[in-house]
Image 1 (cartoon, one colour):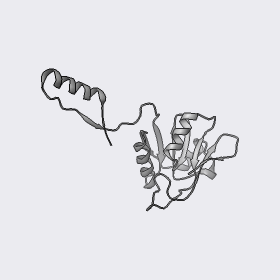
Image 2: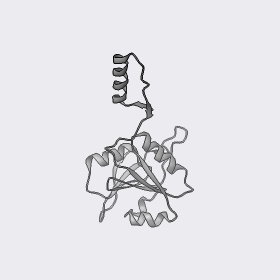
Image 3: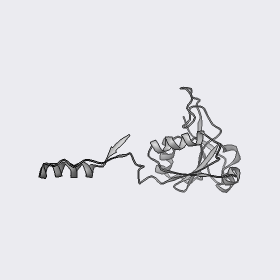
Image 4: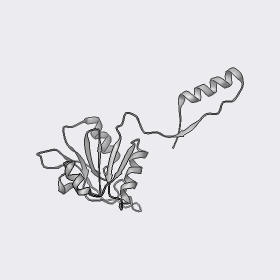
Length: 158
């Protein structure tokens, strides 16, 4: 997607109107929304679908710092993730924990509603979830919400 800064377009048009000289407009790729906090993604070096999920999140306006670690299970425990929700990668954003192939719309909802929870997760690796698209096939899957001292529950279906 190409995004042009409005200010630069106006400056270029104003310069042309005043001087008759064309000032080239600088194009740049769409940048992540500054109001959306950065994702910190923890993944194993050998996982390919994690990168696909990160790319999908970036297309949806998130920026991501990807951290490859050797002991991912230990990181999941540090993040307070219930073992029943584990998937292939973990992330943090805006004080919340994300696990697995969570859709961007679910993350945006989480950041908008700000519930008093630890985070949301898509356990396992459902076909058709972001980063797991496979030839148009799609499983229905649950996005789970979890909090300390409570059992995980279905937050929404995709």
